[in-house]
Image (cartoon, rainbow, N blue to C red; front, side, top):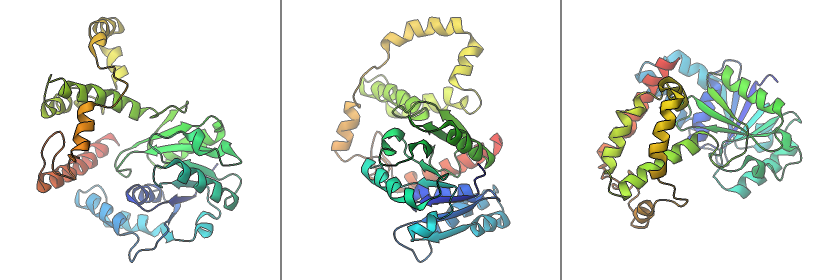
Length: 309
C-alpha cells in the first residue's frame, strides 16, 4: 500500500509533533484535525521547527516545505476522506479511543489503516468496536516524536500482517526507526524495558542504596552512554553469554521484583511533589532549572539524532 495522505486526530503535544513528522516526506500530505480551531493552529509546529532551525538541523526552506504539506480542519468527515492512514492522538481513555475508531470507520476507505498512538493500552481492546479489526494497529511514537526516531508498530490479535508490513515500511520510508511488537502485551517493547529499569532505580532510592541524583548519574555516565550505539543484548554478545550468565546468577536474586508501584513514588504524588511542574519530586527544581533541562534535552536529541543519520 502506498501511503500518501495521513490524518492526525488530535492537536495536542503529540498531534502537533506527528503532523510535522509525516509532512517531512515530500510524498505525504497531512491533515490535522481538532474539535476547536485556533487563531494559528500551527503555532506549536512552527515553534518546534524554529528550534530545529536555530540548531542547524533544518533550514527555513525545509521548514516552509513541511508547513506547505499540512492543512487543518475541524470537520471530521472531510478530514478522513480518502485517507490512507489515520493516526489518533486523543487522551488515554479506552472508551474514547474505541468510540473514535468506531465513528470514523464508516467515513474512511475500506483499505485505510487505523492507527492508535497509545503508549500502553491494548490494541486489541481499542479495536473492539470496529467491524474490520484487521486494519487497526498500534503506532507508539515517543515524545517529542519529531526528534526521537523510535516508533513501536504493535500488532493487535486481529491485525493483519499486510497492515503491519505497510505501516512499518511507510514509517521507515519517512525516516523513522520502526520496530515490530508482534504480541499485544502491556507496555509493548520499550516501555517494558524502561519501567523495568525504573523499578530498580526507584527501589534503590527507597531502600537507601543511593539518592536520586546518584542513580541518575550512574546511568547517564555509565551504561546510558553506550545505548545509542549498542543495545543490551548486543552487549551480552560482546562480553560473552557465559560471563553474562555468571553475572545474572549473582545479581538477579537481589533485584527488585515488586508487582506494585514504588511506595516512595506514591507518597511523593500524595504530597503533591510532582517534579518539574511543582518544583519538587525526587529532587528540587527551580522554574529556571526545569526550563534549562527541557531545552538541554531537546538540543541533545537534535545533536544525537543528527549523528545517527
